[in-house]
Length: 269
Ligand SMILES: NC(=O)c1ccc[n+]([C@@H]2O[C@H](COP(=O)([O-])OP(=O)(O)OC[C@H]3O[C@@H](n4cnc5c(N)ncnc54)[C@H](OP(=O)(O)O)[C@@H]3O)[C@@H](O)[C@H]2O)c1
Image 1 (spheres, helix red, strand yellow):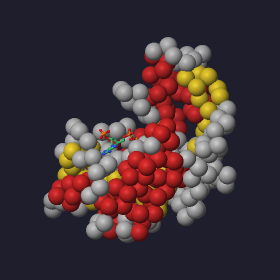
Image 2: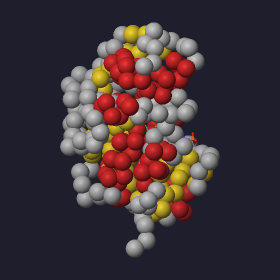
Image 3: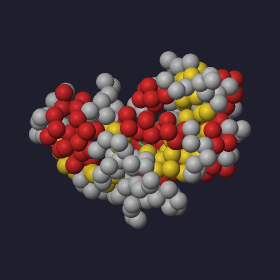
Image 4: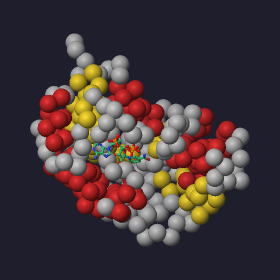
């Protein structure tokens, strides 16, 4: 039997390469990004990306591409809406449950954690609002949604929660870490393996949460990382977030249980 064709958008980002690696043996992977991908397309152009995806004729679409930084979304909310909501809504049409949108714990307001998949999104930030709008569009088109928590793991470009800390320490720069924002962080490799499983479970729940093994602040995560690898903690700077658009606790719950515990994930971060 031939392997299913899986289009992975956002393949060049932090999460994308781990997802491509996880799928490589079980699927014919077609990557999509603006450059350095099998299909080069810009989600900003209405219709163009949906047409490019359709031309690639995938059996499944795993949609990671997004304006994924909060600060970018605050600067350009209209573009956030376009990239994070309208574009996935357009691409999802016709794929039904074979389209999976990767979303975020930041669709919640942080006041009623832990959040289960059917809890009502109440986003505080432009990023969260645009991703929640994307979820609604994708669900309306018959697609599915997988929400991820804060991701961490090794990254040569210093992306992800621990990659950013390592990069700062290597450059001798202080790194500020919130003490009063809690999430359920997950290693990017474990997230990718779980996404592969969810992608092919098209008869499963339409909204899924992939929570990491423990509820942690970025400050706690940074200290655990340094302790695990003998990195100096002097450059870690604890700060209390005061921003009204940053939720205080978006811990997720669901049926997913990662195979590795936090210690094993941190050893690989
Ligand atoms: N990282 C986290 O902690 C985290 C947590 C929860 C959920 N998520 C979700 O996971 C997904 C992946 O996140 P990430 O951290 O890997 O993001 P990232 O590193 O910022 O990567 C974003 C990806 O989207 C592509 N992209 C951005 N703008 C595009 C456009 N206009 N047209 C086509 N492609 C575009 C980028 O490719 P080019 O720029 O090369 O075109 C890149 O491949 C996102 O949906 C995000 O909301 C991430």
